[in-house]
Length: 329
Image 1 (cartoon, one colour):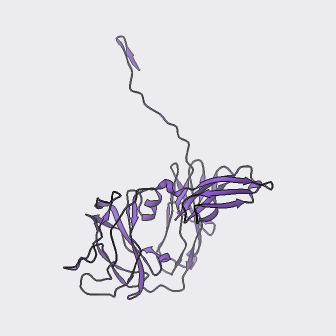
Image 2 (cartoon, helix red, strand yellow):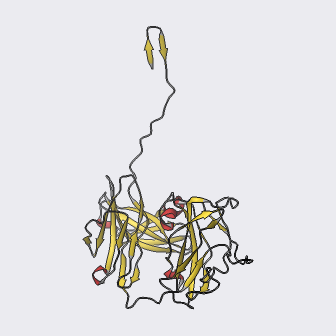
Image 3 (cartoon, one colour):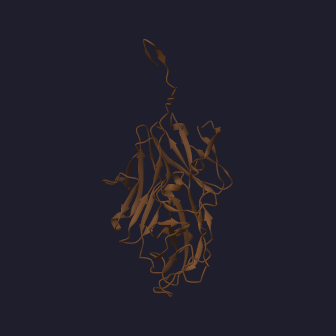
């Protein structure tokens, strides 16, 4: 209110909300892998919580000097790099520790050199065997511009799918085509290929954007035979993505990743019986806190039906016991 000798005037009201700090939570965990000598390896996590978030990576329990971001890069993997990695994220109130990821030195480098033409429209003159534009969440608007990208994932098995090419930007529903030399698939070998698309304003990778609630989508898993070098007709060398069809993005689903925990029984010996409710067919990580400051992994559960139970036999040893659950991909 402002006043003078002639009167007073009052401003429009404003609202002030004081929010409790949010403890850090991992929405993307590091992944174990088999790695050959000399390979470029990147471990990555994503976390949410009240900023600023501080990271520290550990290798076999020892802090990695300078490894204080959400990603850890090993540009030239060697025997000394093999082992177990995890990362701790913290803010001013609490901390959380990721699941452990194990990097194992593979015996030999995989066969490589197969060619795949990463394109969602046929490029050969007079051919439209592939016409698969990608749409936004409305199913009508074609993706366009630098905010949306597509990246090719490939592997000799569905479990070994890895990004094998840089992200490609969109124009009128079609990403910029390129020929990809597979680092994990030989010429004439059967490989599995998938296109993964996301809004990179939400994250630099598909996994990060999806975990943080950004738009994302992916094609069906395609099984193709990798091409040989210089496969005609030039310059469209490489096996095409035969069977690729259009798909659309999903809206961000950050709340879909959490699980509801209910205490169903507190036994006389201190054992707690819990029930987790969530999406059927997914794995969940249950975390536990006993000291008021540090969340640690407790159990990984497969929620086959939508409801799964678990027990904690050590609960009687702690004065305070907190639990939370989040879906694993």
